[in-house]
Amino acid sequence: MSGSWTGKVRRATLEKYQPEDLLPEEQPAYVASWIYIFGVATIAALVMLIASGLVLTLQGPSWWHTSSVGHYVNSVHLWSVELFFIFMVVHLWGKFWMAAWRGRRLATWITGVIAFMASIITAFTGYLIQTNFDSQWIASEAKDGFNSIGVGAFFNALNTGQAILLHVSLLPLALGIIVVWHIILVRKKGVVPPIDNDATIEGGS
Amino acid sequence: MSQVLKVDPSKKWTGPTRPYDLVKEIVIAVVVIGLLAMGLAGLFSSPDEKALTLKSWVAAAPADFAQVATGELAGTTGSAGYGAPYNSAAKGQHFGIIQLQDWAGVRIPINPANSFVVEPLLISNDPSAIAAVQTWQAASADQQSKWAKSYEDALTKAGDKSSLADPADAFGPVPAMIDGLSTMAASGALDGALLTSDTNLPTNFTKPMLFLADSDGYFGELATKQHLGGDQWGVMNETGSWPGQSWLWLFSFWYQIDPFKSSENADTIIMLMMGVLTLGLMFVPLLPVIRRIPYKIPVHRLIWRSWYRSQ
Amino acid sequence: MQLAIINLNHPAHYISFGPFAISVGNLVVILAMTVLFLLALFIPFPHSHSGKQAKK
Image (cartoon, rainbow over the protein chains, first blue to last red):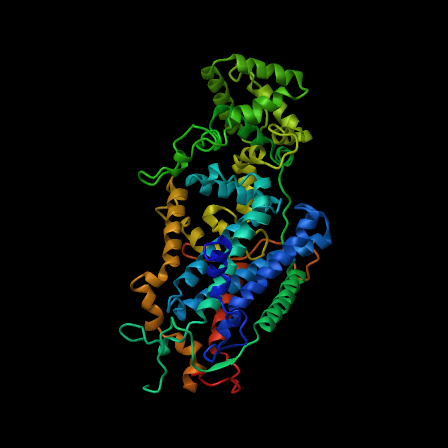
C-alpha cells in the first residue's frame, strides 16, 4: 500500500495538515492588530474580481460598451482591481514590518511576492481586453516592452484573442493556485510570533 | 523584560490564544468589500474612450494617414524599421551581450509595405489603385524607395495635405496608391481587409494596430492628450480622471529620467532591472541589511503594542 | 452609458515636482493606502479577555 501513488499524494498533502490548523477556531493572542485584516481584505477583493469577471464573461468583451448594466459590472470589476492592489500593498507593508518571514516562513513571503507579480500580469491582460482606446494604447506601448526582452515573439499584446483567453483562464488559474498555496502555508506555519518574543533573532531585536 | 515569553517562531505556538472565527471573518470581508466595490462603481463608474479605427484615423487626420502610409512604403515608419519579432529591418534592443529581442527571432512576420498598403489595394475594387500597385510591383526596390521617400518628403513639407500632384513625375505610382488606400480606409474596408488578411473570423488585431501605432500625429497625439505617453508617467495613468495603475509606479519612473529616457535600449534595460528588483523583493528575507530593517525601526512595537502591554 | 454620480470623464489634474508627475486619482489611491496603514497601526484593537491561557 505504501508504494501507491495515491498513498504518496495523500501523505504529502492531506496527512500533513490537521483540520484544526486549516480551519481553526482560535489563534495566538498576539494576533490582535488591525493590520491583520488586509490579507483577508485582499482575498475578498479577489472574490469580487472573480464574481464581476464571471458576469462580464456572460455577454462577451464588448457588452459593456453598449449596455449600462454591462458598464456598471465593468466598473465593479475595475474598482475591485483598485481595492485588490490597495489592500495587497498594505498587507505587504505590514508583513515587512513584522518580518513575517521568520521561523521558516520564507516560502510564505516568496509565494506572496509571486502572487503580487502574477496579479500585475493578470491585471495587465485585463487592461488589454477593454476593447477601447485605452486598451489600444496600452497594447501598442506594451508590445515594445515585451518585444525588447523577446517575450513579444510569444505573447503578442496586439492579439486581443490571446489576451482574452489568458485573462479569463490560464492567468486566473495560475494566480488562484499561487494564492491557495500561500494561504495553506499561512495556516500550516501559523501566524508569525512578534519580534520581541523571538528567541532566534541574532544580535537582539 | 525577563518576563517576556521567548519562543522559536518555527515551532507551533503554545502560548495564550484567543477565539477566532475564520469563516465569519471572510464572509464579513466579502460583504464589506463587495459593498465598497459596488458603491465606488456606482459613484464613479469607469472610463471608456472609444476605440480608434483606420476609418476614424483617415476621417480625423487625413494628412497624417497619408504620411504614415507613405512611410510604410518608404520603410521609414516604426513598424517598417522595427526588427524582431516583425522583420529583420533593424537590430533589436540589447543590454551588452544580452540580445533577447533578436534571440527570440522573427515570429510574427510582417512586411508593412506589403501588408498595410499593397495587399489591401490588390483586393480593392479600385482599378486605378490596382494599376498603380502593378506599376509599383514591377519597379526595382531602389526605384520604389526613391518614389516613396520623395513623396514622403513632399507630404511632410506640405504639412496638412493628404494628396499632392506630381508634375515632375517624381513620385511614380505612390500618390495613386495612397489615394486609393485613403478611400479604402474611409469606407471601413481597410479595417476589414487588414483584420481578415490571415483568417476569416479574426480576434488578432496585430496588423491594423501596428499600422495605427505608427501614427504620432493621430494615435500618439490622442494618447499624449490623456497623459498616457511614456514620458508622462503614462504607464501609471488612466484616461479621464480615474485612478490608474499606481502599482506600476517604479516601472514608469525609470522612463522619466536619464540615462533611460534617451536610450534606444530603454525597454530592455528597464525590464531587466525590474526583473532584478522583483527578485530582490522576493528574497528580502535573505538580503543582509534590508532584512534587519524591521528590527532597527521598530514599527512592530505599534503593531503588537496591545500584546506587548499584556505581557 | 456612464451613470456616475461623480463625473470623472474629464482631463485629470496633475501634480508635478521634478521628474515626478502624478494624477490626483493616483495620488488619492496612494494616500488611501498610507492612511489605511497608519490607521491599522494606531487604532486600538478591541482587547478580549476571553482567550484561553497557555496550553501546556
